Image: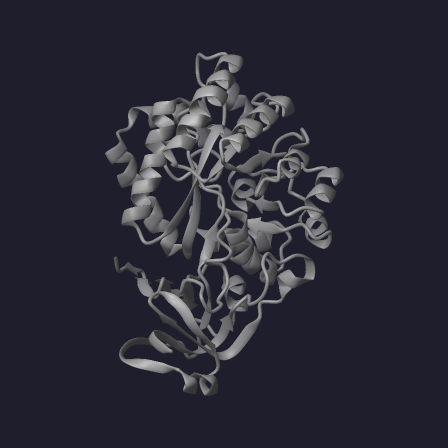
Amino acid sequence: MKIDFLVKNCSELITLFGDSPKRGEDMNDLKIIKNGYIGSSGGRISFIGTEDMLKDYEVEENAKIIDAEGKVCMPGLVDSHTHLPFGGNRAEEFKMKLDGVPYMELQKRGMGIKSTVKATREISLKELISISQNRLDESVKGGATTIEAKSGYGLDLETEIKQLEAIRVLNEIHPVDIIPTYLGGHDVPPDTKKDDYLNKLINEYIPEIAKKGLAKYFDAFIEEGVYGKEETRLMLKAAKENGFELKLHADEFTNLGGAELAVEFGARSAEHLVRISEKGIEALSQSDTAAVILPGVFFFLREDKKPPIREMIEKGVIVSLGSDYNPGSSHINNMLFIAKLAVFLENFSMEEAITAATINSAYAIGMDKEVGSLMPGKKMDILIFDTPSYIDIFYEPSKNFLRYVIKEGEIILDGCKLTY
């Protein structure tokens, strides 16, 4: 078999080889090949191993070759929770939060999500694509090669479609893979009765967006003051009947049994889970629903409550990481930074953070057959760091060791320079 792109002499080639997702102690086994080689053909991995194993492969005469001696190589990071396409800015609200005004209190004052809804309704599709493209570029600089992106800042059919159309266009023009989610149950629109919106969402919006094929997943926010358990159940039922796969913002500020509801509906993921119950942890541990942990929110909002990470991992919950990039509660779209926060603030081991930000995050958005680990047949999405050990990435958290980002066998970041 021919190789048209080869990375050789990797000090540590972190493969995460094997079945996905990873649970429990398996999250600490990165399946590292010392002095590893990895090659691709047509953007797909065709070889992985050591130099002596390469003799049965033909490296093309004009193949691109990177000598990674003294460098760490690992799968491209996967951001399994973002709110990428939105308009406006909430810097003043951020200051109010730092001054002590609670997040849900801002919601009651008509700020929070509602202010971003207003800004997103007012922005043009062209502008939305442009600013979201710039945000994607920043994600690449933070090591992300695949992300999930939610709508949810329209809460009317026209604007939700605009957000999802922006994601569709970005998928065509940008190298990063984007998995689209329709977050129809993000909040209640301004000046609208909840029952009226639920009726429109279930009977008009969900069927129409399903018909247009603009999103893979449907998501909702089960939370006190937003949507209760039975209201969320109605949304999930309608979405499932219309062919959506499911995700759920669950157990963030209060516990309404969101994790259990996600498992009941066979959701791909339950996300946030700061206040998950013992019953919720047990339900997740016995299911194929991933827990998406968002340490950026804890950091950005200066929260004092953390999700019970150790208990979740020890009980066998599928644990993944996301940035929750959004203008209100985690204005962070750098997955390397998120992985570091997971270690320093959320009780992850370094190995667990890498696993959670790669193969498990890929699983949480249904992309683990394509990305998240380095195995033959998968996309050649890899990161190369200017350090001989992955330990250094966390040991020197303020230092940027990232040298190359490679997407499907093409260099898209060389040093600090984007190449596309």
